[in-house]
Image: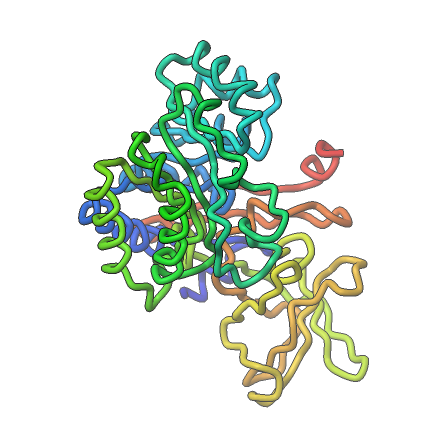
Length: 378
């Protein structure tokens, strides 16, 4: 990474690399071309619309989780819009239906309540239902949509085709940062439970959680699974990854504000795990730091901590070859997906700026934040 870029950017700042993004997109297009599947961008994981001009050249559209994401997809991506929500409000549905190509309901009662209304508003809309295959290899229960008592999707015992007039598709989502082996297992359970209904459909959505762009992912197996499924049922297949689009496409650049000592050296940064990198606390996981290693591996160890009053606002303990100084830049790797979409202004802390390194190597700061973002949301 160009040190001049780092020096000149304000901090905290997300920096997206369009070259890295396009590398992911080219891989996804290869899968599309070989398998015949359509691939959507899941806005819940990546919604940086200033990069949609590039993404839309490769992908077929977006999947949205409600009205606001659907509006963003229609306004900025301008291709297919597929909208699913655990539960729709009628006041939102009347705006969602006109701008969606597919609408997916979570339960049979919601389908009965709103499907006909959606079709009356938009006769071209394709109606679907999310189902629960009741199987998952999800690594964390908080991210397991098929876990015990899950509210997400209709189980077979609650599935009644006679109450689903006009249905054209089924949607399932059971993966979380997983490979094609996990998808293969989920597909077996999905087919076993819903085999009587799949041939009646026009499309099946395999959901998200496919870690397609991670090194070591078995791309050819994914292609084979899709090809086999499509040939067996003569049906359209959709994938809707979010993290796979943004995977390893950019960083969060921060600055050291102070260094204090209380048993260990603690570097206080101008960012926050709680506000800007919430998955490091929720998941939890340890973010990689450029030039940093595990505590004790290198000569100088520091606890990296956020600039809020939350005692647990801590990124972790890292070691470095040289001592840290006030003003030094700390760069957190792979901080584009599931960060901007989750970031908050907790404690009044300023949101990171957003910068993009374009394909021609120019750096553009596309968004800066301040007091108004904190005030206007309260």
